[in-house]
Amino acid sequence: MGRVDQTFLRVALLFVLIRETQSSFAGASLCGVAEFCSLYLLPGMSCMQDLQQQNPAAKKSQLLEPPSQISISAKYEQFLPSGIVSLLILACLTLILSSPLYAGETIRIASQNMNRFFDNIDNGKNEKLSSETEFYVKVEIATTMIIEQFSSPDIIALQEVENANVLSNVATAVQNRSGARYQVILLGGNDVSAINTGFLVKHTVKIKSVKQLFKHQRLKLDQSLLFSRPPLYLEACKGPVCLSLLNLHLRSMRGIRSSTKGHRVRLKRLEQASIIARWIEQFQRARPQSLLLVLGDLNGLTPADSYIDVVGTILGKPDNSNTELQAVDWISNDLIDLTLYIPRKNRYSYIYRNKKQILDYMLASSLLKPRLDHISFSRIDYDFSDHAGLLVDLKW
Image 1 (cartoon, helix red, strand yellow):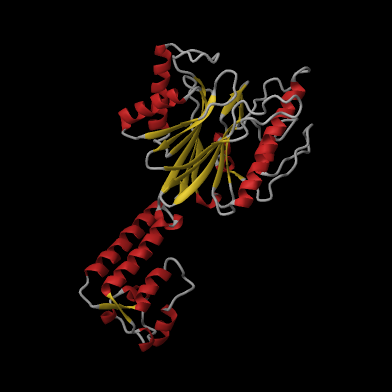
Image 2 (cartoon, helix red, strand yellow; image 1 turned 135 degrees about the vertical axis):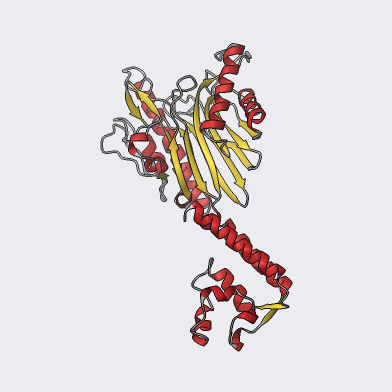
């Protein structure tokens, strides 16, 4: 259903609601109220066929008319007080407008690697220190990106951000320029250069839960920390519908071919992808009706590199046909790569040696996929980041 059709339906339903609540008749037929709901919510449970058998000339539109204007059989001449009728209609209207199929509402989610976004304050963590001018110029660029390129998403997943102070400055600048207010989420990780993952969440979205995963997990090879940037989990609700998001910034491919360090890099990438896949399996088994979106900078290629299929492992369908390391399929209900719905010519988030690649993804659970309305990569703004942003609109 298109946006014009959705708007027309809303107007029509509101007209019916106003007409029914303002009408002077003392009651309405139970069949009429039931038909109002069933026409849109339960088409298979309808009394319309019975009415048409009694009166073949009856039309669908007549079923919403007051009882005095339609001929109905004695079977359905059960009257309800007009106040209860109005409440029933209002309940039906609420259900219809809250349904993703009819509502026309969306939730916009973005993901952006911020390319080592540091502030101008020395926190003693061996971090890169920006000058005051450099920092506030980058804040302004980020603000413009969020407002103009991203159209102020409801939730923004961010990678390569130093701390909450950076995000707070961006959130304040966005509010000053556009009025949109964001809540800041950032939990410090293990990265030696002090970059982290975080979220900006609009104040209209309720934050239900925030958790950092696997911060103390160890790499089997040498017992070093498995994640420099631990996955950041967020459960957030817009209206009655909640969404679970897992923000990832995984080990890069840097050094993967090294004769001295390459083996460790490859094993770390495999273990990261595998433990995330096991978490997804456990999450979906424990909460089979929950909506899940795994997003961020996965630092994985599609098709996979010749060492490990990172993205395929997290999706639940690793392709081991051409990889050195063999990944296990941990996930019984596979995720869906939403970037595949972007036109091929625009399907890239990074350019390496003049070759377009996808490093940034949104992977959706099977229950979330039908809500997909639109997905796209933004243009790469090299004044700000070497990664494109990824934006998705989901029917809500």
